[in-house]
Length: 427
Image (cartoon, rainbow, N blue to C red; front, side, top):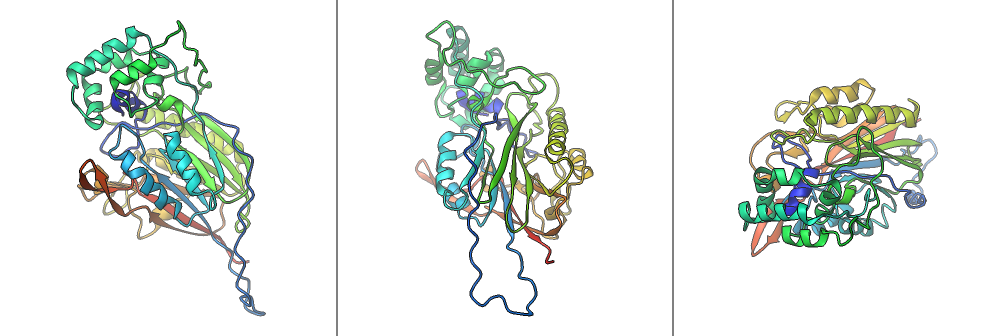
């Protein structure tokens, strides 16, 4: 989902899901990460709050959230207009641990880090898997000519569907290095991208190859393989690790952090974004998006067991692109895949609440605001946690933005966020 580059990006960003079957998104490769941050000090209890005979003081809750920002440049509308108000609003949420998805561009990630530096100083994000590659004229000229002939005058959001439909043969013939370069900056148009990506050397000097990935060789990846997924927290990070998942076009990964929040004790955290089921979008390897997600769940569950040894409080959160049916208005999405997570001991406390709502909702104004149903595909799942759990949605309000010369109503993203509060039972 992207533009000329968008187009490129587009295929790689195939993403976020929903019955609307849009192409979108991607993930990245591990980084060493910044040094562990000290846990943010807890506020002192008010003087005189503890009284003899009053019983144990309630533990301070630990608040965790997942949010898909939908900052897929060239794929979703109004990315530039939404980014700053979205980041301000997200930074104002009362969270101790945040798993974000679709913060593709470095500029958006850095703005989020700056906005949350005092409240969520510990961060972990996957860096690009490789530098921009390069193209030959033999690759770019046919694509630019096709875009000029078949898609002239279209904006970036109309351009992608046109390129996918009318110039798909030109796209699929690109080498991974060329595709990766063209998909690195979806703000540019076909001519600009081609000019920037044509190699001046017989072989690209940028040449840092992407890391090995399970189940396949180097493949085209949007945004130069940059990750849209990251963790931010005020808890002490005791360990960082990551796993690159098998995927097509876009890179998917799981971020692992081991935390020790004073209020709830040690916690194994897995933050991820799984491939969506993309109806109507051909799979580049003649298989299916559903099979990709199934393979990712296999790898994810094995990784969880390897990191935890099957013991300890474990948190799995993110846009999983699978979820249950909940009457009257939430439709199932690949429910057999979701059931596999539950069968391995994970519990979805939010989905069990009477007030559970969709997170990918068809009435979201960013997607046209039509329909009464939706999907619950953004999750905070727990295993081995003994305590009280309650959930609520965040980032659900709309905003008015300036788009060109018009005021437009939009959602912050095409997803709503989910915040879950964890409290240990009083001893």
